[in-house]
Length: 160
Length: 279
Picture 1: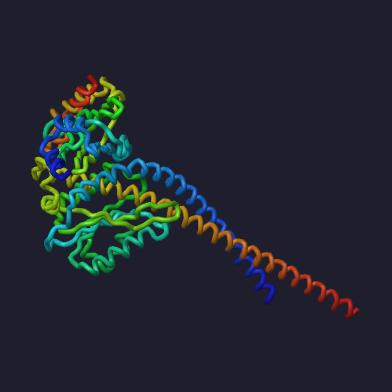
Picture 2 (picture 1 turned 45 degrees about the vertical axis):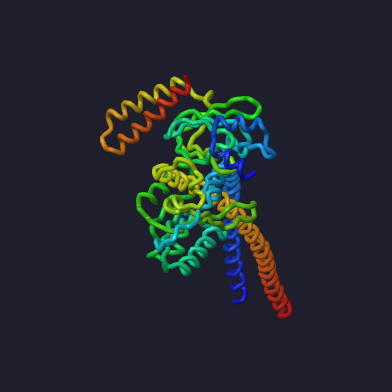
């Protein structure tokens, strides 16, 4: 069992799908806790796959993904649930932790379902942030404006 | 002169009665306000719990341990500015005091005026930072992020750290708990860290900074709920005590009033009797 477990760790992502079909006695499942400070989206729910946007690139998480930590970038998180449905959420920032035992903690600073986003408001925010950058004086103000632009660009992209 | 004393006592009792009645009104309304704030705080806490528990998972799963080193201990004592809430502030103050006694090389970041007042007298040199204007409005993530940013900007270094707060259990009970805080070095040296793939110091730094804010937010939410429920209980007890005092005072008042009347009657009657016998 130990041998097959370590073999499993060598592969990640797609290969584990094939391994799952073979069916171990304790087939790996993935328990997701996806929460924001003021709301809980998933609390230790078993899901099939999660796609996350991170600063080290967007990647998909499947059961028995190699443990890692990543910092979230503004973008869309897609959760593929066990019953086949997909849910998309826009996240502003946060962290994702994948542990050895296939538990995933996705902690987002703000997370909203994508279908609640209003594309015109997002475009307005983008225009506002761009003008903020143009009129920014200090380094801090510039950085804040750039962050604002990044988030609004991602928002617009998510609405499309 | 006894009569004069009787009247004076009567006046005094009625003044006291009025003031205790006012106090009872105030404590009752404070209880109502706390009850409303408690309901809101508890609701927000329920939504924040998975977030707060999730934020601690990595440190448990990666078996992060305190750094070996002499940089001292950091305690973040989470409390609030407002009193009349039972043992909420004093329990935190007590634990900080015993901790500093055991570990003199300790820096304390205090969130909330009340704990500052407790520690100021004897441990002023251990206080690194104080955050005020806490507790009036429910905490939002931005508040915790602000505190976390200030702590990071201040460059405090520590080998061992903890967040001290009151975890909410039930309406009538809370427990003073601590959550461990780990420095970036401690995370980098964690026994299970090699298991985690493709981590560089940037990711670890961002991760620990974000989780500091997240853990602070969670502790603030727990503390707020404990504080409001404790204040509710304290004000309820105060109202009950005031009620008892009012009953006792009312009894005394009535007895004194009747005594005064009886005395007057006696004097009138004995005066009238004296006049009659004279005739």
